[in-house]
Amino acid sequence: MSNVISLLRSSIRHAIFARPVAQTDLQPRTALIVLTALNLLNYVDRNVLFAVQPLVQDEFHLTNAQIGYLTSAFLGFYMIAAPFVGPLADRYSRKLIIVLGALFWSGLTLLTAVTHTYTELLIRHTLVGVGEATFVTIAPTFVADLFAEKIRGRILGVFYLAIPVGSAAGYLLGGNLAPHYGWRFPFYIAAAPGFVLALAVLFLKEPERGQFDSLKETPERGTVLGLARNPAFLTSTLGMAAMTFSLGGIQVWMPKFLYSERGYTLAGANFAFGIIIVVDGILASLAGGWLGDYLLRRMKSSYYLVSAASMLLGVPVMIVALFVRGPLMIPAIGVAAFFLLLNTAPLNAAVINSVGGHIRATGLAVNIFIIHILGDVPSPTMMGWVADKRSLQAAFILPVIAMGISSAILFYGMKFAPPVALDGASAGAGKT
Image 1 (cartoon, rainbow, N blue to C red):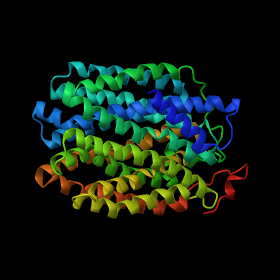
Image 2: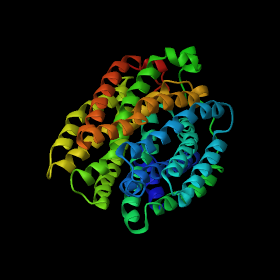
Image 3: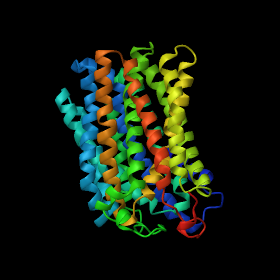
């Protein structure tokens, strides 16, 4: 964990800011480090299951569709919980809700010790989804209110480093420990740090909602019903939903694809995919955030453009990765993953900027509901069903199609991007 904290601190200091640390910067940066570390544990916990799926499948004699349903159920409850959490966070202490949620999900992760049937595992997984929804709905709004609009892409690039690093840690943790100690053991390791970081959040100072926002809260930006008439929010959310369908399905099934279709060992499959995710994810998260902020000075739609282009470029590379064997396969998977993850920071920045600060947690709750009900809730089960009927290789055509759909929606959404203030300029000064 100390190495992870050092990485995050270095990323914030060197990749984002080119000046010495001022005393006034310490609180926002410390909060960013703590919340990013907790976000990392969030993704470790959910990705451990992907790494140990073959062992769970063997113990409980499950079909591919049943094992895929574990993830669909987790995300289903996660998705349902988000709309209840969002309004609470817009009215009450975000910090306290984050703490209670982290303690809840960490405690449930430890209950894997008494999970001995598929039904018990399913219940455990759905309740963890409820706990994690409290963090993922609220923490990005907390982070967004710590820093100015013009650097949100880079800041969110750091925060969302947790996705690749946590995902890779989950694959590596499960893939290396489960064959020796059983598939339950890695969950214990994943749970313990969550209690410590949850308590650390209590010492953070909560920022004022929307303190750096430059646009006024119009009915479209500042009310829940207005979101349905907010094209910037709708296009960024629907584009993210298609991306989430693709990413969710690939994360669940790629280790199994390498294991069962390409002859890798369980540890080897998880190691190969884990390394791809962590290296690509770090580079892509930081590069996407930096590129979005850099182009923001030239076009207000830069977050949409970077996201749309990355999804489009990933389509042909993913096709190569699925159908080419031999030494080109792993590099192709790596390049495809890079393009898929490049949109992480700019696309989340686009969603956050499309909603006013005082309903931002509620807006993110709506976003989470939509992206999961259309995205990674159905995709693992759909891919499992296709794998049972045809092959796992055929199932990967679904996320490839979703990448193309995401790109088309985001290119269309460019014209609706809201302007932001740059160097104190008027928000309306940005170019189309």
